[in-house]
Length: 381
Image (cartoon, rainbow, N blue to C red):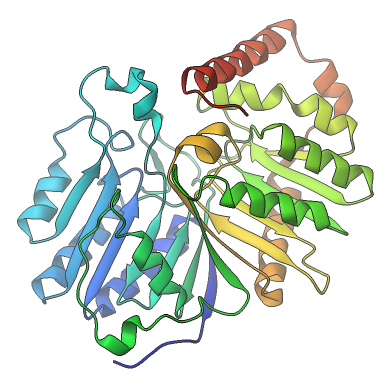
């Protein structure tokens, strides 16, 4: 089959683009399909994906799917039985018995969203196996969820594939031709960033901090659950103070108590330093992307599963890709610019300062809850 060392890049916005691309690649798969996700719900276009995976397994393709047990809700799962019966290797990560989630040791979840096809094509981003118009907690959505992923082709697939076969995750792999597994660069200008609880605890956070620290013109971040720690808050504030255009595109609709209200507890200090905050209210924002200095000679960007909150940065297994490809950085910047102007609601400092006492109390409670959870888990943030 030969070696693949080139890298083909495509930004996917929303599950519609993601499903279209993923289904096309599944239909063309010849040897192996590996999938990791946090949430699975067999609704809408997920049914098409399952049908395509079953068809691939029937034609001899090795198919394996790992999903987080907590993210998938209560067992039994009809889709697990359906896929397993078709010869697909299915597994739930860290199953929980009733009330097990109360133990801090069980808060370490598989939050990665990865797919590798034929050790060549990679998907990495925020999209679960979940239809754009369906939310497991809120039901039908009137507008699609906003999310991003990236489709890559090249030798970066070998790094992603290896990460999916660690002792903790252990998706079963096919034996590939010797030439296919020769160690190679993961692609010029690209880096695969993992966050685990062993040797890669702070790789994603450090990548953000380096990029923000050297930013000269722009730092644009779209993040679903935004509650960064002291280091990242100060890095954003220092960047804004030296004249960098720092923009945050954040969740504007209520989804979870501590994420929604906890984020607003730190708005004041960010706004006071010159950081611009926009909220997305048309539907749920689930994106985890950033672009820095896209219009300069030293761009940086990241797309992945990691939020900028304590769950992602301190507890969960996460995966991002980051890079310096100038053309991709401009594409991502253009998408974010369009969204902030067309669907973003700017948070004005005066309006924020005038928010209700009830809102302030909720923010304090949410932030305090987050701090208490971290204390119980033995972490500092």
